[in-house]
Image (cartoon, rainbow, N blue to C red; front, side, top):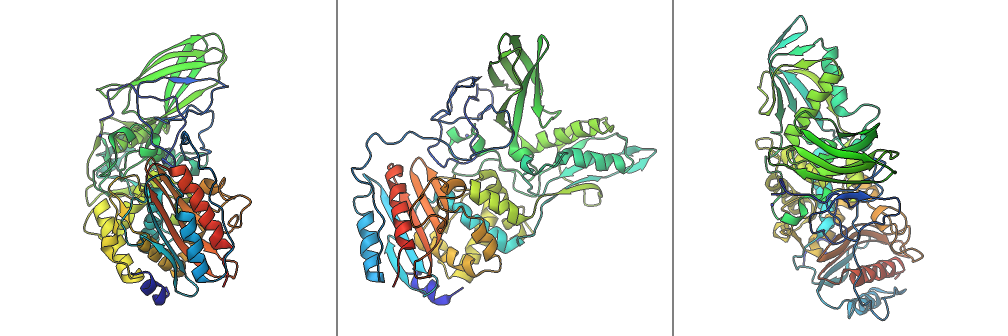
Length: 539
């Protein structure tokens, strides 16, 4: 880190109600947040993506093409969108950026900071020390503290342990499923699911019957499933999946409806023995489907509606309310498939200190998770990585938002010269309405990340303007295309962009653009104009 640069910038219950499952899956509100309401799982080949997202989508694939939600644009666009300019010299750049900001939005407030990491001087500042809602640009802070505390090659290991003896294939005791913060994302499954791999290892160890229970241990993290500051109307949406030290499938279940002759089949993926499914779906003519799901107070899911006789599988995602218990039930279902019977129940609990390891599966390396998190803005990844960093920094406490914030502030103070009071993170994703960062703190973090040993990993994790992920459609045909790489952030009241751009003269610039207000679309256009102006800057 260049110390001269640091000195220059130093100045919610959802259960028991009918959930809407008709909308596409979104893991982050990169556009306005949805309001949940009663709806049905209705899908046709010609149906367009709804403007407001709720819990899930029906899809023929389990992969996700996008992590952002769709929003209606403002009724009136500005008469002329801000334009980028080529400028020579720092004073001219400051004047140009100030001109772009003026009258750029109808309401709201801006915080902007631009620093040359090459020369160590501040090129532009507007409300640089003002705390603002960052939205998903908070994920850059999460990436930085996770890479700092854990290292790019770190993996999260989920284990199965036992507390009794095995005689003649019979375990006289319990199996413990102990989580370590792995989201167990389906994108990384190769042939087998993680639970299937664990079950196969258990069977290979010689166990054929368990006289005790399957105990789900989520004690690696605090037991708070919903971070502080998440709004109640988020909680049925896929982008607000629950947070747990023992997770599965990014804490989303899939309801899969198929016609099987004259009957309808309704199953869960991944399968779990702890969530009963009540099937009231009828088979009718045609190839469409119209299905509703009610999450009952006893934990069961009642599925009703119709599916066409010639329809393919219809898939709908739903947030898992209790990830540890669901994951424990998924292991039990996988054990059954592997020929291992369990006499007892599935329950939550702690693993005894003397338990013996039976099976283990590891997550992809941290760099891969960070890349997916930043490029696609995946909230559940951010929450788990944030707590994982907090746990690594304080071995005497479970990972939590508090321990992670302490680690983040410590890193920023010691390595970036940041006033720790300029960053408050109630969560790791930026979804919390309590989060606050200053543009100055964001640029200082970017400055340190640029020089850190894990800096290349951090840089590579950011979307590229006009090229990839959440920036694919922005700044196309402008000087920033293929050059500027940054993290986006958008909610109903926030538009933000933070990252790096190389100026025309070769200087590496770090920038933070944060807008808080209701005129997001004009704010984004303003950010794009400023980004390309930086790309054309020279002196």
